[in-house]
Amino acid sequence: MMDILDRAFPVDPSDLLPPVSPDTAVFWEGLAKGRLQVQVCDSCSKSRFPVAPVCPHCGATGWQWRALSERGQVHSWVRYRRSFLPEFADVMPYVVACVEFPEGVRMFGWLVDAPKDGAVEIGAAVRAEAERWPDGRCVVRFRLAKLL
Image (cartoon, rainbow, N blue to C red; front, side, top):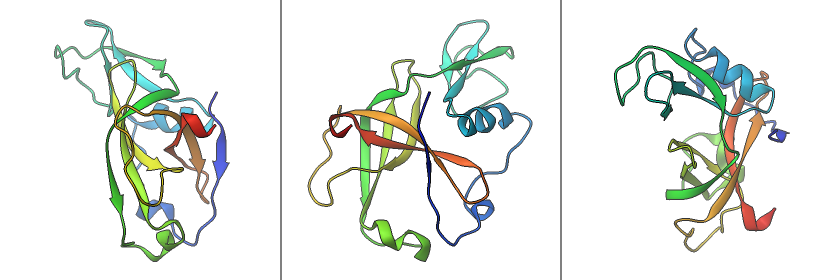
């Protein structure tokens, strides 16, 4: 189970997070309980993210929700040196990483312990965490595994 880390900042999360829909509710509810879940196709057994009503690999419409590994590796990353929202000024500069999981899906999230300057190693091991926002919703963020 993932750690749930609370973060307080003066912003309305509903302005920043996608709306919860019937298709995405299971993902968001699981994340709020510390579980990272993805859809797995009933037909071809491939994992998929983001959530979709149809498998992008085979076109089937049936799926199951399964737990995703909490560990992955950095596929790519970008460092933001300027905050476009004042609520994020306290974490500048920050790195957003694209993380690939063993199940074959990729997710984007804040790489919490990225070096302030210098490169993030492609292939670096990371661990997913759930960060709880003031309204109770959670987002995925990552931490370098060597710093755990």
